[in-house]
Amino acid sequence: MSSDTVSGGLFERLESSGLSLRYVLGLLGLVFMAVLPLLSEFELGIGIPGVFVFAVDNLLLLKLTGALYFGMFAMSWDVVSGYTGQISFGHGVFFAVGGYTSALLNIEFGIAPALAVPVGVVLAAVTGLVIGVPALRLRGPYLSLVTLVAPLILLNVFIWQSGTFGGERGLLGEDYFLGLGSDAALEVYYIALVLFTLIFALLFAVTRSDAGRVFTAIREDEDAVAAAGLNPAKFKTFAFVLSAAVGGLAGAMFVHSPVGGARPSELMSVIVNVEVIIAAILGGMGTIVGAAIGGVFLILLQDGLSNLGDALTIPIPGTETGVVLTPPIPFSQMDFLLFAVITLVLLLVLPGGIVRAGIRGGRRVLRRVRSDREDPVATDGGRVEDSNDGENADAGRAPERAVYRNYRDALEGDDDEH
Image (cartoon, rainbow, N blue to C red):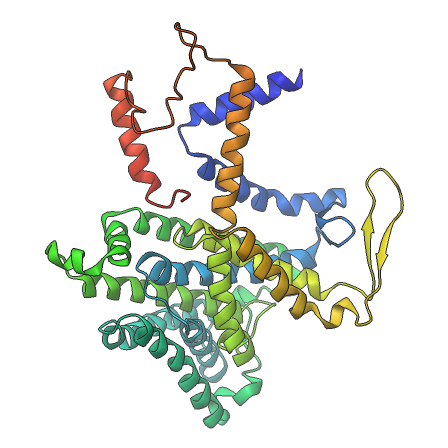
């Protein structure tokens, strides 16, 4: 079978699926994550050759477990900040409330994690309500300042009551969720992946509903929403509580996994609060998909940089040799500096985020494939307009095709590339 036939077949399948490119890529990504453990049978790896490569084994599955929970946390931030525009600088407070509540119930009262986690989620949602209702009366920097101060207060309370919360060291002795520790990496990974997929589906549906459209309208012009007879405070409170509950769920599951723990440095430090913002913006703020990808990408990038050795060998294509870089300071000791520089470069090069850049690149490839397969020439010798471009895309279409396109546009929401 020729390559043209293969590319043409793939192109036709993408076209006939009725899904936009980002949905197709998202589904392919989930399928890849689902079958990833099977690659361990073939001793394969993923990563950047010569820089860092993750071997597909139990250790990688555990790392991905932590990345998936952080991806859930990033999605929770995107709901309230990416869609409603209410920037939260202290979202780690919900991550911490969910994690600490579940861990304390488990350690102090012997409650199983399967029962303690839902309690942590509820308490995180209540915390979102307590903080959100008065804070959402504020706007702009005042709201951001309140969300920034909240985790600092909570952190000092934890240190002050170190006998209960373990101080800066955190809590020790939490049970694993369903008793699955590091020796059951496959089961732990699939639990995280299923939960990640369910949360993604939930937030995706909410942000594509009428409520999601109001979220976006609030971000664009809150006064116009109020003038339309809607109550912006009610929708912002809903977004805040939903976001807090999801963040609490991610934190509670994280502390009962083999890669997490109820410690301030992992749940609500300043770095955690900054990282979740970077993850959502780097992936694509206001898309949910971008926050999910950004969260997973950020954790894997950090882990890959921390495992760099004292020297780095950059392979030369076509040869078996490479250029060896040996800095005066080992790479492993400046991993956070490298992480910050790489993140800054990505934010400057991809201002709309990884997802939007990927969509733009994918569309260029599809258009190129389409132009190679067809050379549309009008009867007058001019170019035939692409029916998928421009405002007159439905011109000449059958009515049912126009209705279908309207429903598809409604499903896609407003997170197209800008």
